Image (cartoon, rainbow over all chains, first blue to last red; front, side, top):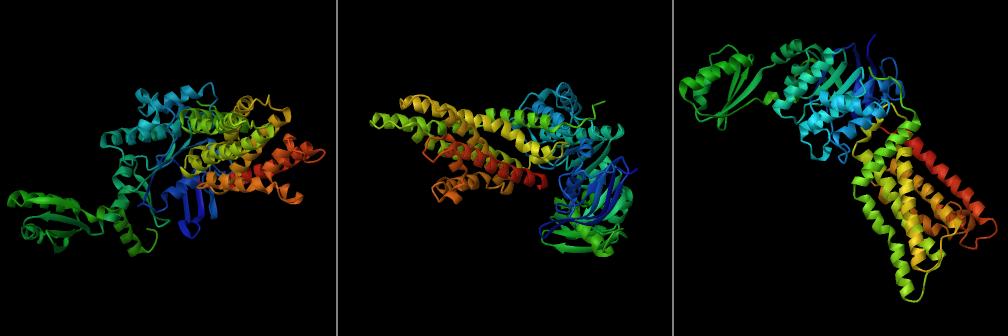
Length: 310
Length: 234
């Protein structure tokens, strides 16, 4: 039985489209929702969490409506993307309240909250007020509020946003441990490598529609077919260009002010050859960037070419 | 393994009431309202010094004015901020009935508002050397606090962003509405509070009609708040 069934679901906010005619089934495991900001990830997550109702179509979680059925919401743990919370409370007080409201008996709620905070590595800070927390600590506390009542289904909206690299690795490990413990987890992000670190199963959302779904490697291959652009800012752009001009993976070279833009079909090989050329020639590279790291550009490419689902 | 039960409306109300109380104690709103509640006392002291000590009726009017400020300050801002700050996403994603958010807040904020008003009323009467408050005066203040809090809650659910300002504006219009012809004044919450207090000569049975009118208006506004919050999305 599917945990989530989304059937021709659409959601409008007045005249603004949240998601459009989405149909999707989620059986279990960890699934990443990938898409640029404003793609509709949070709308879909909020609908699954019972915070929004579909404008059209139907959405069920564990066979019921999360908006109307409290028994369904009892089985869901949700961590929103925004940072706002009741900052006057300590982490332990906050998670305890959330556990009580999720149905954990009052006598057991503090212990459940302590356990959830410990699971998120927040034991040392649990008696401190949320007001003084860093972004990473807030994310951990939010995740603790989502797991304190031992839900079967976790919805984590951008849980890694703004978190420093060390905390990111730690949080990823903890989320993966929850998945290994049998929880069904949906994690959203606009950064591909964040999702890749968590799961190989992804759903790509763009402009309110499911653009692609499946194994991350298949989707990465799809994305990699699109020429990848690398902008090199350096003192001798012609030297760099001549070193790469004969490579078969290079599709186009464009000289720009203060640098050169290379379009390649094989980014890994291109980066390797670029490093060799720079070392051999002594060119001083001041900046290296990839405009395609903006997922929006890749998604524009995917929609532009296919006009729909892949 | 955690218990799979769903919290009842009453237990959710109690949890949200405790949360509201804790936040109130750690915030500034309570201390600001203590200062506001002291204004009738200041009024009584000044008038007594001027040789014109106010009567219970005068002070009751002043307390009603304070109520019109305090209830929106507590209730409308509490509900409005929750919706605007999106902290409702935490509450509404839990298996609790939506009305428990309003009832939980009212369970804390109505007694606090009433305690401030009653304290202010008693001290102001003492300062004016006007004795102790009448029983109906106290009952009217208590019932009025509940009714006006429900008005503020409903307005906050209808317009969360400006809930407090709109509630105060609405109630400031409601105050003079009581002076209008009989059929219109029945719609005024503050008029019904005055009628219930029996401090004015509003005809026979004014306290009873005030109690009935106040109950009807409170129920209407309460239903608006409950229906509205049921359909609100985060």
